[in-house]
Image (cartoon, rainbow, N blue to C red; front, side):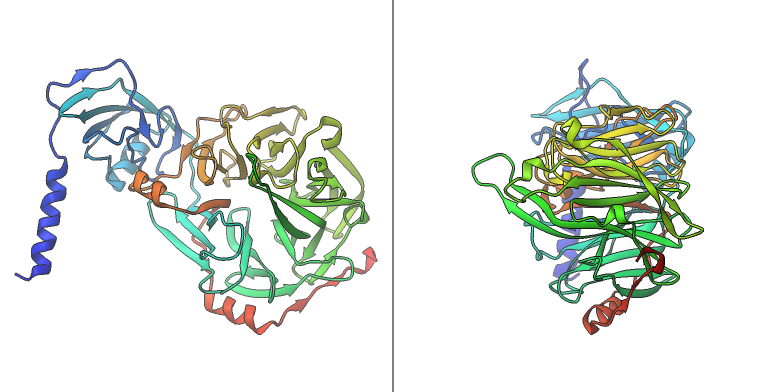
Length: 493
């Protein structure tokens, strides 16, 4: 037997001996356990990755956990933290769809076992059939570097895959990876800076465009697809950053210009609207309605930034769009007036069933991700009534949200853990517009993962299938500096 085999067997025996004992003479407590992540009372879909957790108290030596379904089934785990079998967890949650799970936790600390009061996990009857989520991971250094990457994660397992990383496209900043309503067969992505461009991928074929024209000063970003797949809306802007010294907020991001256009991906024609390319206002974050007849966006009056950063108040607006003719309407409807309400409304995201409009509210700015007071709000598109999603919001930044295909789930980023790093959370949306308690993206070893992960998650979105992206082809396209030049549609000149 080699030294490597002996070392491996020794490590295996140490792991097995670390914590395999059953609770003995446990003191019964009327308190629920303090666990990390906090999965107490959350609502989950059947088939999600196992909600592994440990005790929040790092001095706990061992935990013993039993999960029982209200409709039958049982699962057990014993160790320093839970490590539920993936297939067993899937079977248990599927069996209890529309029911609940009762979780019994016993923990050993300083040689004494304590059994806590059971907590429950609701298993929604609404499915989450999407394959996974995409997101960008970036260190909060606010510059290119640190291997920025766009990743995808199978939400039913713990498997994560890199779509593209900075090591593959050195010195390039990329974001705004947008599938067509969770279908990555149509995907757009934007590269900023030298050699930048706007990519549209259809059925695995990449096309790289130069969307900078005399009417639009920059490449397209912050994209959103039309439900037909024939059009994609973009914001053309310049993003800048300023840093604070000696106060709670670290950074403010702002635009010197920002306009919205729609690209006809069949003809490479840019569709403009006079209301969206004025020099006195800055438009950002376009999003088509579920039926494709309207385009939502945020707009703010132009001011002297960064000196007047506190004056940036975005209104939430809507303009008609005729997909048959490929043109905008003439009237702009202001749904929420930022300056009048002394607030800023951004990141409008309509549910795909046409029922709700989720957006972000802050005291100012068109970049809510940098603001502690950023909260998610919900508008009833039948009545126009709005309310804060208080059952989801935290005392820190909550933003960057997107809907699942069936509009019964949404994903968002939150800095509620430490105020620095954005993490992914999921929440259920009921037919009545009430959300369930959100849960953190499950990891096999959550404490180790989230304590050692030095990246922030942002711009998450669901995908119905795994994204297929040819990184080598992207490298060739980015560095050969050849782009298809878009042209402005004649009727808009």
